[in-house]
Image (tube, rainbow, N blue to C red):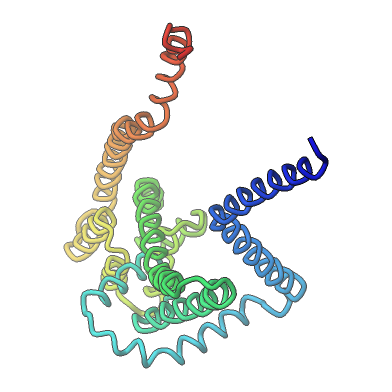
Amino acid sequence: MPKNVTFDLIMTTISTYWQKLVEFFIDMSWILDGVASGFVIYVVANVIWYGYKEHRYLYQFEDQKRAIQAWVKFLRPFALTFQSHRYKEWIKLRKSQAAFMPEWDVYDFISYQILLGLAAGLVSFIAFVTLLGMTITIAIGIAMAAFVYPLVSISDAGVKRQRSCFKDLPFFIDYLCLAMGAGLDFTQSLAVVLEDAPKTPLSKEFSMALKNMRLGMTRADALIMMDQRMENPNLKLFLQTMVQAMELGTDVNQTLTALSDTFRAKRFQYAEEMAGKISVKMMIPMLLFILPAVMIMLIGPMVLNSPMAGM
């Protein structure tokens, strides 16, 4: 075969494989775009983190809080346009249950939501739309998620505080009953209990109620205000019983003992209920992950050793 024919054949083969390689990379361009986008985001995030780490002294907590307060005050006129009464009542209840920024009212919290939404939308617009050329829908979605995030955060914090109060309430009542059995009145017993009690959400709420009593508020009003802040069914029963016992002049010590036994029984029932739900909750992970793996281990060797395995 002449040399020129061999050379032409080699070049034709190289050209064919080159075209296939180019077509392959064109088909896989979305992967390359994703890798490039991830690399750009990684570089920008590292630059921001390096700047924060090197100049962390400029971002003290009090300065951040003061800056957030200033922006919340600036955006408050926009928050005043929200007219949904149910939405504002929901925020007020969840914010009081979570003890999130007690000095803020509902409109301050909505201003905080607007601030987070605008900041996240601006950053995502610069990062994803301007730098990476993605659609503006991504920036809008991130801004909406940032707007909703404070609601999810205070709702989750409120649920955790409710569970903590439910768990600590029987032991708190026992300690309070022991102090009152030593001859102290309710206010003095509450002060003694709070001196030794750990810093839990329940002790913080009672500390606020004790502070209101020492400032001149009646015990009934302080306990009713605490009930309005927490909206906890078990705590409501305890506080209403205490208020009724104080108004009627009945023996508070016996009432506390009966309530402690009731709440301890409820706690035990709640633990049994949660334990009973574990088997039901484990059904989905078992069906999705454990059962397929077990079936592969059992049936796989049979399939490989079958006469059809070589076909």
